[in-house]
Image 1 (cartoon, one colour):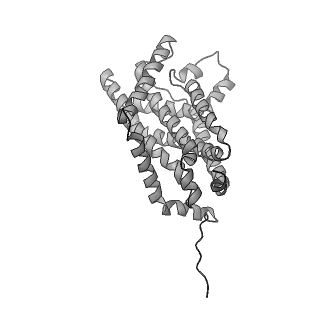
Image 2 (cartoon, helix red, strand yellow):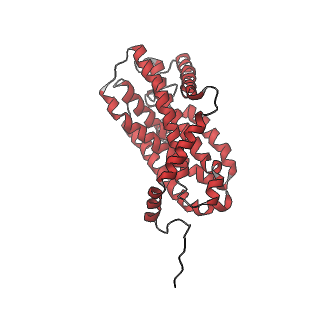
Image 3 (spheres, rainbow, N blue to C red):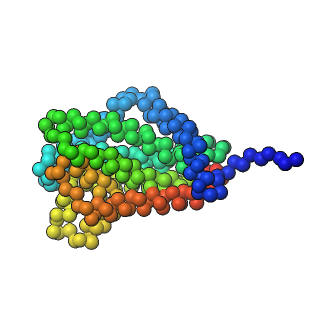
Length: 279
């Protein structure tokens, strides 16, 4: 008589693994909903923090941009900054949450089998909730300034999807690194802080690409930041054709985003079987 066995390891093929992701989708929904409840439960400010944090950043960056007279491209500076700060804060929050997600769920990861990719992926939902709440800021600002909504708004979901791709690729890769090398938790805040200065938040990309003093090779190096093209796309879709998309650097930024997704997923899958042992 043959004995029944329960196999508690990942599928041996990639096809089985992606099928497992669908099978365990209930766990994905549970983790996402749990994180949403934890985010807003027992907080003094509560859901208003999703508005206050970007609002303070918009005020600070608008002042800095005004002080240094950066190019606002004929658009109210506050709108220019707001259309950049919102996707950046989504990216930085998702990147940070995904990087620490496996460590934060160490008890779950070490006890049962499920596709571990579910853990960092579920944190993106919380960040999207924050993003859509904070989106009310730019809606209010556009009404206050009487800025019309252009047909470009139809492309807004595309640029939001690209922001999710950019955050997911880097976040998944860093989540796997963070399990084995715990000192990477100090690298993430540094990268986010660095991103404030190398991403076009308080200035526009036109200050870089339209500046004859900046060498061409340095302009292409600047384009390697995946958020450069995404922020330019957000500005173009939200604020209209006053905003300029430099298509070659934009394609470089998008290409880097998808490259990070491939690298992140491949490395994550390579390290996944070791997570339970080293976490």
